[in-house]
Image (cartoon, rainbow, N blue to C red; front, side):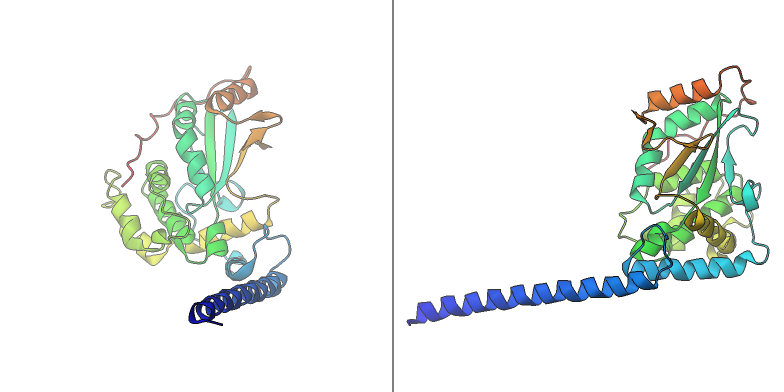
Amino acid sequence: MGVSDNKREGKRSARERLQRERVADKAREKRRRALVAGAVVAGVLGLVGAGGLVAAEIGERSEAGAAGPVSAPSGANGDDNLAITVGAQDAPSTLTVWEDFRCPACAQFENAYRSTIHELEKSGELKVEYHLATLIDGNMGGSGSLRAANAAACAQDAGEFAPYHDLLYANQPPETDDAFARNGRLLELADKVDGLRAAPGFEKCVKDGTHDDWVDKSAEAFRKGDFSGTPTVLLNGEAVFPKKGNENITPANLKKWVARANEGKKRGTPGAAGPAAPEAS
């Protein structure tokens, strides 16, 4: 065998060895995931791997906190005061939204339907009840879902939940980038909402995690609910995302569904215009 033949044989052996190592790595990872998944409480939305353990730990912390009072943000309502409502309280229809500030699909929903939802809120046809989850912290690791949800609850205390909520989704980092775990980034975005950063107690609320226990309790309610994932969007209790019955959701269809639900009903007290379109930066 010549020198060139030896080189080719060496390269082939190296490739084969690398392939064997990759197969072995995949097998080890598969076994690891199976072991971890077995440790996670059944039914936690299919969370697996290391993220599943994080979700289980968050759930345990939430259950411990649920035994006593939690620091709900100002104006929170609904079951256990876990909802933040935007729009006229007497609107005839309610859009219930379970979402996670790190969830890409949630951002897609919010950024696509924001103007339609605000239009319906402004006209008194619809109010929206937001429930905050921390699913991506469980799936991917990190704390950006929790930190952003706490900051949004702090914005609720300051009367600026809606614009700050919209701004977070307009500036959502990639799912694997836990940028929202940094309070500095959350406060930087708050600067874009008029008066929010300077609102009494807001910055301290963000830094101290004042509403962390409330977010945990909301996340626990999500895990215990019969939900397939985030976003979960319900119109008067009926799922409308990604479709309602056989019809896919679109801005026009959402308006149509709300109009049908409101037939013969009085509109709610018209509110102020929805927040201006948020900036992405």
